[in-house]
Image (cartoon, rainbow, N blue to C red; front, side):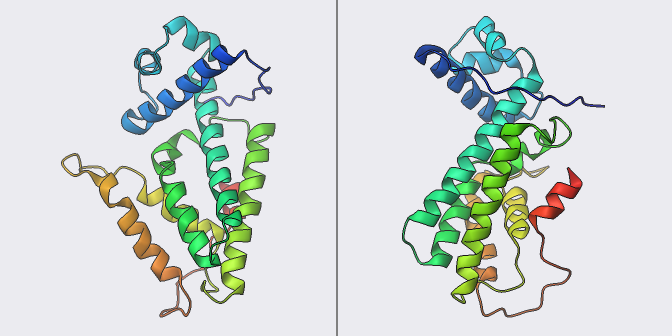
Length: 214
């Protein structure tokens, strides 16, 4: 059984120490996307251009590094959503821009790290999740209110699509799948436009569904 970790907010770091920490998180994120949660920590340190001692000084174990990567991804997706709300675009186009930008964060490849590894009441993760829920819900509401988004789509449907379409598929090592992610996302987004041309089975997925499963 994987233990959870709840970490306090990190104290403010010196500029060089902060840069090292950010390099480690970015390197870890790319390594986890490419190799999964068991990516060697030595390789992560090498990619970040730091020594192993620096990595362990910032992240004493793999769980604390997982947490930092997940928090960074959530924070970056929130920023993408807030940018979409404020860019002045037509509501559905703002939603389209957000979905494509969120896909670039490679959420699907990191999904296996997001289940059962963290305290569900971790303050920073709870805060990021609340901001994400509020902002994305507003994006969908604006598109729906102007008649561009079909009525039977929920915020959870969007994140299921992003997660599924950015998750590496088994048995496709000879195919550069990432080249086709945005193509398939656009097909999904076109299916979200109103008026709807079919009746969707089941019900819309909401953020509450994710909370119940966590």
